[in-house]
Amino acid sequence: MLKHGRFFIETWGCQMNAHDSEKLSGSLRRLGLEPADSEADASVIILNTCSVREKAQEKVFARLRNFTAMKKSRSVVVGVTGCVAQQEGAAIFDRSPEVDFVLGTQSLVQLPEVLATVVGRKEKVVEIGRHEENLDIPPEQIERVSGIKAYITIMEGCDNFCTFCIVPFTRGRERCRPVEDIVREAEVLARAGYLEVQLLGQNVNSYRDPNDGRSFEALLDAVNAVDGLRRLRFTSPHPKDFGLPLMERFRDLEKLCPHMHLPAQSGSTRVLAAMNRGYTREELLSKVVRARELVPGIALSTDLIVGFPGEADQDFDDTLDLVQQVAFDSIYSFKYSERPYTYASREQVDDVPESVKSTRLARLQEFQRQIQLRKNQSLIGDTVEVLVEGRSKKVESELSGRTPHNRVVNFVGKSQPGAIIPVHITRAGPNSLFGEYNH
Image 1 (cartoon, one colour):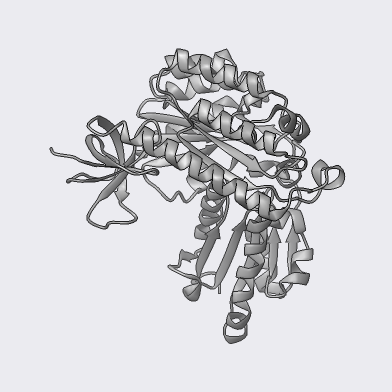
Image 2 (cartoon, helix red, strand yellow):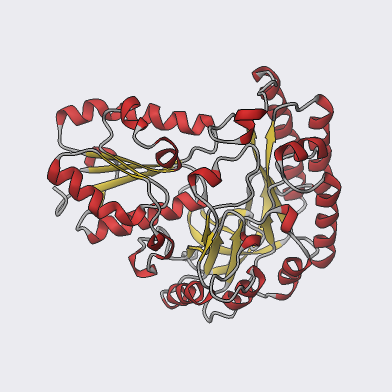
């Protein structure tokens, strides 16, 4: 079945999960499988999952139920990978008997052996151990989705243990790759024609070369020097560790794009302390002011949680005030949901009613929507640099790309993916810009 089969991978969650799916695709390709357009054409189906929010986790189990009838009608292997796999392990089989294997976040390199056991011995397999080689899969073995932009893993895991966060339990403790290995991967990508790389880590500020202790800023310097690359991004830094050396890199490195995702989580100092975030709202605001002094116009995005245990009306108002003062270019906002293993699940009572969480989330999102609309409308009439990525998702006749500030631009005109072009902005919505390219 494997030699001439097809595979289908469905991905939830963050950029790290998306990159893990590229690694899984490369592994399956080396086994002789080809990608399928949908699960209906696949002999191997993998759900690469996220468990950061309870809603995302439950969607996985609902999705798995769709494969029950399929497995009765034809031969198909169903696997669960990612954070839900790492978190739940063999318990997934109890809830979803249609699953054949469970593969954890630090065990991707074991996929060939796992599939061989499932297919050859007709056995269910759970592999959620830690495999050191998982951190440094050769770039030639990664089946990347885009030929223009690429992810590079620089580290895995997190040592911060924020009270709400399951990442240290699903991704493990911090482990870093050497600078030389990361730069070599960037060079391979540049020679293959990639123009932009994004460095991935749960808390990139904590990066240290395991051989000589070089810092994240030193890594940025080294990747910035790679010939052929035009753009450099990273995600995510931690606000408590975001300091002057990193701010200066945004000013001094010509390839480092003027956009940073800075996950605030809350605008209330009291709630931030309960979350074990390690900074106050005043410290965060001070860092934003300093960053904008060094790099005027730098774009900032963030994560925000509403309804954290004990969050009062004043705490939520503090979050709205933070959003207003910073004027984020975009936010990812969520209702708090209790996650297993975390300190919050053991010691902090989830006492904000669901109706209050929903109301606060809707207010926050509409508040931010108006900010984004005003900021985007201020760009009408400007000409911006766009890295063309392909066709627009909404209008087939339009092309789409991103600015250095990570703003999505849909435009009319003739160009090719991979081109970097000037686009004149003619109108704007809260989530994207629209323009024209006349060459």
